[in-house]
Image (cartoon, one colour):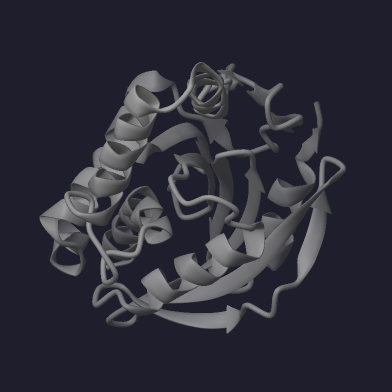
Length: 239
């Protein structure tokens, strides 16, 4: 049972990236696509100056971080992570497996559109876990298509998404807009508990939005292992 909830919670971190798009107010094939069409029309009809501004605005300067056997680092996010003793980095094959792990367990929580959208915009940067997998940290990045979204806005949307899940059942333990410093930058913090039957695990979420990207650090651990979770968090340092 513990392995089942672990798989579901890891899968939820993959699909969580649909949270920054309001599928109730519109959809990927509707409002968002329509906006793109309007922008394209404006580029065709507008002045050369406007076209240049649009091109500059849409320039994507994101560079994925680097994984090693000992850790992960990202110049873009200004972070360096060293795997704590007893935890091990997943290689590229392991990351790909993690991205698909347990999706069938939470598929009933998401529409096909949401799942497709999440796969389009989300990127697994790294995952580090204990041999049993119950203690782990996942770093994901989402490309944002909503302008001026703050870290607090993203966290609020993420927690709303989690609370709506049917399996596992999430309880929000802390989401008061508090921040903590990681590697010299401020991150929004939230803490949750995921339950499936008699099994439960805890997750700490840390979010930072920069330009058109959201960085999400998710630490998963068992009951009574808050010290282990803190050790993982302390393993992130400035680049």
